[in-house]
Length: 290
Length: 228
Ligand code: FES
Ligand code: FES
Image (tube, rainbow over all chains, first blue to last red; front, side):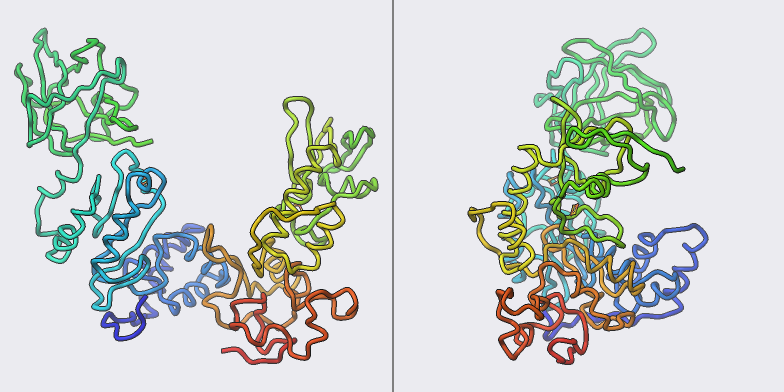
């Protein structure tokens, strides 16, 4: 962290605020991490004074609290910038060039990872694996996951962060998550480049409902929900998906957490499974990355 | 839940008390097992791995740390098999590489026939054995120092690197430290290697306070330097 000329402020810790957080969690036993998370949400980091107050209020020793807060990467002991860039340097991301992405960020921001830029705008952090290895190199900018980051994208990402991710709409979100899937039974790719949806190859499955059969194409953008179907699926109806190659029915053990309909599993190329709710119109889906 | 269990240690079939660790049982029977992070009166921690022994038979034999492994019925323990000796030697060689200045580690390495140094010497001040942390918490009831950070950056010290209000300057942490130069046997100068006692200035004076030398006291009993 740059110590001189920093324009971002060291938080003014309000004791009542801290005590309120502690009181909220004291009912259940334990809960130190929950307390620390909430304090970090208030101040953006864990101020020393707040930690001391927590120690006092919860009758824990400061050593333990300090140990926990320095153990986890997501807790910061120093004030951080307005925007947070977090580059994954886990093994999978590393071998796909996360190191050069980090260096590009460092160069553009003029800071080392773990530091905050002079103007208090950006903090650069690294983590070891975000659990989305198939999409690596992964970078999180202000809570937004960006997959397959290239060094050439870095500048754009920083610009977008400056403008505020909040205003840039859903388009960015989609761009971040294009997935390629294959049939979990025969491992044939389900991607159909000849029929793009949302400017990406679509996912091609056979759908059957009420003795009707036809081709269904789903957008490969995670969370997009756009689809094109040959046969009519009335909203609210539950369809059956089959692999167009081996004709195996795509069924899994999991039910949709929203509508309890069965979900169709698809293997994500590179590892993991995506489950899609079979009820027409239900947005339920689940990403299971191992 | 008192009771006896029958175990075989180095071929000797013996009855020992339930709840004992292998280390306690072996030492009770007179089989030597070297230890570094184990100390009577402190909870077992299993950090240094020096006390490894082999348990089980055939393909299922495995190495475990005897200071943390409780005896169980029918357990077969070997405290000095080839595998154990080899592992022990390697552990000592690695410990010696990270802390070559430690008298205790030097002595242990010499006693176990470590005659070479294949690894780059790191000259760490700490092997993270946690003795001082446990001493501070369990015997001195202070909890002034503890582990911080994780992985490569793991270290022992006071919160925020400032003097802890709970520290009573007992010096227990320095007393138990196997790596600390400050403690090099002052009363037996001929055995000391660091020369700290011949030297009128304690070795910590020129170092960063609270950073090196495992010294968390202010003022320190050795150098009497106030720290800020
Ligand atoms: S290595 Fe980057 S997400 Fe796992
Ligand atoms: S003495 Fe058993 S691991 Fe250190």
